[in-house]
Length: 380
Image 1 (tube, rainbow, N blue to C red):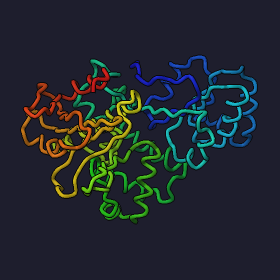
Image 2: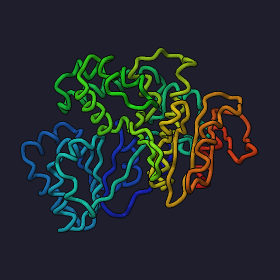
Image 3: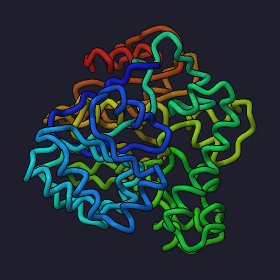
Image 4: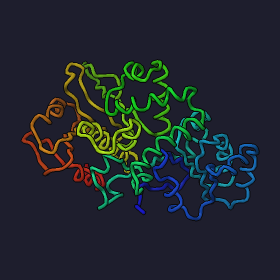
């Protein structure tokens, strides 16, 4: 079993992450003595669905200050009212675990504002996998624990995609038109790492633009994808307004677009960029790498872009990804264009493998694993 780098707060908190990210396993290891209410247990779920008051009866029997885990809490968001009450009444400390923020938002999670923190569980990062990490495997199969630990990774990924449609979407009745959503998924996978063009996605998937916007919301709220906003400087420089779209894991991208088993060369660029995006996002949540994360692209130069701009206080760090293994000066184009941005402290290129380099104008060039080590050591 791999050790996760997520630190558990002492007070109550929500733990959200995509299915298969290892939330339940981490909870069992971290809180072995906690009282568990598992809403994936169908008998338990049906009993509380019919008689939600039984949840309060269960909590009354516990000692004050005990830790209580409610797994898959989004299945019965109405229980949050009792959670709120027993945090106040008995000082119980809850871990509210789920794979979807959608129903929780609708149920008014703000009722717990200030009483429950929010934590995220991401796919593995290299620090957690250690010597077993392999970049090519990570790009092909992803880093979801449920897949990484499987002896049949391809089959597990295919099953994961079908399970998502059946359990997360159909069972929770998140969409009315399941065939339309199923057509949308492989199209959305093709837009991994690109600025979101709702019109193009709608045309390819054969659904309305408004429907696509709702489908993207569902992917984000079920934690399978995220939007990266464009950086907007407070200057008289027009910036792109459209956010970029990333899936949370390379394996999920390939599963959704039904990619063949082998990793095609044309896939590598977007998959590698997405892997770095997810790595930065994980360390933002786990270790406070930055407060905000953007991409940078001035509208005047459509061919110039910086993949990631990290904002930490008054400082900024620009990170560019390249999927080739031989450095060329052309890689520096975007980082040189952004050089005069106020507060910019470091400019970094990340590429799959090769030597550590530094250009004459101070651009740092790191192979992926070296860059991951800098993040693990909090040295960025």
